Amino acid sequence: MKKKPAPPTKGKASVFPNAPQALMDELREWIQQARISAARVVDEHLCALYWRIGTRIRMEILKDQRAEYGAGIVSAVGRQLEAEFGRGFSEKSLRHMIRFAEVFPDKQIVSALRRQLTWTHFKRLIYLDDPLKREFYVEMCRIEKWPTRTLDKKIQSMLFERTALSKKPDKLIARELKALREEGKLTPDLVFRDPYLLDFLGLRDTYAEKDLEAAILREMEAFILELGVGFAFLERQKRITVDGDDYYLDLLFYHRRLRRLVAIELKLGDFKAADKGQMELYLRWLDKYERREGENAPIGLILCAGKKEETVRLLDMEGSGIRVAAYWTEALPRAELERKLHEAVVLARQRLAKDERRQQRLEEGKE
Image (cartoon, rainbow, N blue to C red; front, top):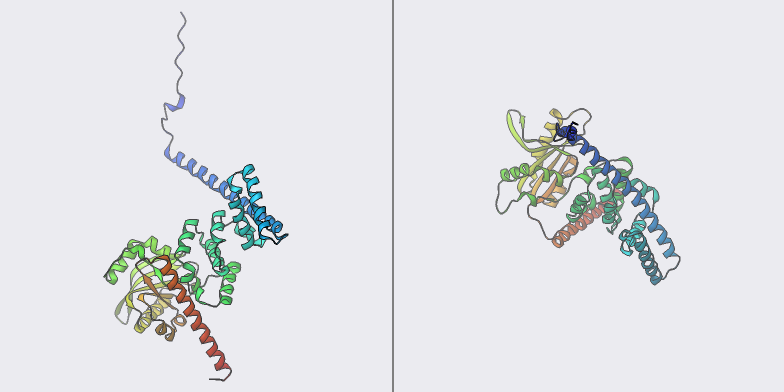
């Protein structure tokens, strides 16, 4: 009598009903990294392709100066390419590519940037009309490795207009951006802002300095995002003892790219002249007892509810290594934010131009 064959076994699956978690985690990480790398390589090649297409269509359009000819070419090419290759080559997409080629005419610059920025970054950047503002965001995206969502937030919060850099003459702005691009040189004017938007702290009506500090510590991740990439939190209420007297610095940070300690004092009211002396004491102490070899001198940031411009100018705060900035705890409508920052930039540039003219007259002996 023949024996019945044994039923097929499920092999090791019966022994290992689930794969080891550590193994699965490692394999998942490899797969995800490979997918990200592959997508990045594809995006690089697409950016190069889009630039070539935009450049070539621009050349075709420039052959004939008539506007209707150019519009007709783009429309016709878009219809045919979309039919063959899909929506990524529609008329609307081609206009993005043409704008890309107009804004970035230098092939070498595009070749360098496409390794660090995605096509989504470029589409957001190419429609910024001010070339210096656009270059600022390009460089900050590059060095701080912003995802496109962060770039959108920075543009919406008018980061460029809130930097000290924006209040300088165009020639000086271009010089600092060139140094950043070619030498990686980051200056305090590129790092510090005014005002700082702290609406994420959720502070309303009346609050004390300790409430402001506690809210910042609670929302430290968002606070550092507003400060900018490169800041590392070190201590709160840093004890500083001088001649037996104890003082307490509100917040102490370190900025990696500036390679210096950053002391932050929080003030509920307007900036006062006495605030300078207090911060100078803190900076001198930090320079003597906390500064390490190879670091630059500590720098101070006084965050106030209000900033008195003339007081700040007369005290030459920047000459003492101290920045003064206002903070806003409530978000403003976009139009109001734009108006306020535009006025601040115009006034700052007017004051700077006036100071330069006065200095020139002094040098010529006319005053």
